[in-house]
Image (cartoon, rainbow, N blue to C red; front, side):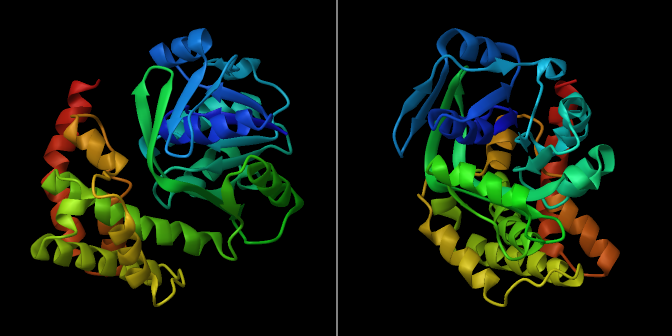
Length: 310
C-alpha cells in the first residue's frame, strides 16, 4: 500500500516513520528546512518507544509528482486543511482514501467539501510529539494510537486493509464502532487541556493539581460533552470521568500542541478547538461560559500571531 503523509511534523513524522520502518511504501509531503534535512540526513525519530532513522526517505513538496496513492494521512494544523485539500487533489485516484489525523471535529467535513465525501474517512490519533529540529521528530509522551473509520460507520475492505498496515507496523490502531463518537471523545480531552494550558501557560501536571484550575477543567469537559449531545453525538455517560482519568495519567510535563504554539507566538488551533465549541454552543443554545472565557482571553494573542506571520 502506498501511503502519503501530508505534513511530516510531530504526528506525521512519527506515524509515517513507523510505517516506513516496517517496510511500507511511504511518501512524505514536507517543505522548507525540514524537507531539506530529511533529504540529506533522513528522518530521525527520537521516541520513548525506541529511536530510529529512516534513510533514505522519500519526501517532496510537489504533489503533482506523487502517483498511485492508496491512502493519504493528513497531519497538518486545522487552519491548513483547505490549502492541504487543494494540494492533495493531484494525488487522488478514484480509490484513494484521505484520513485526517489532526485535532478538531470538523476536519472530515472540510476535506469532503473540497475532495468529495467518497474519499474521506474520519480519523484521530493520540501522541505527544513535535519537530525538535529540522529532520528530527521527538516523541515525548503518550502511547501512540490511531483510530479511523468510514464516516457512515460501515465496515469497508479499504479500512480493514489500512488497519492491517498499521498493525503490521506495530502501531496501536482500531476501527471504532462509531468514528464520530471517537472524534468527540478526543475533542473532549484536547479542547479542555489546550485552552486551560494556553491560558495558565503551565504544564498539565500543574493545572490539574490546583483546585481552581481543576474545577475549570471539569467545567470545560462538561460543556464540550453537552455540545456533543446537542449535536446528536452519543457520547457515553462515563466520557467525562474517563477523560479526567486519562488527563491524570499523563506525564506532568505534558503540553498540548495548541498551548505550545500560543506560548511561542505562533498561529494556533484556537478557532477549531475552544472557538468551535463556543460557536456550536451558540448555534445549539448550549451555554459554554468556560470555553468562551478561554477563547476570548486567547483571541488577542491569536490575532497578533496571525498578523505577524503574514
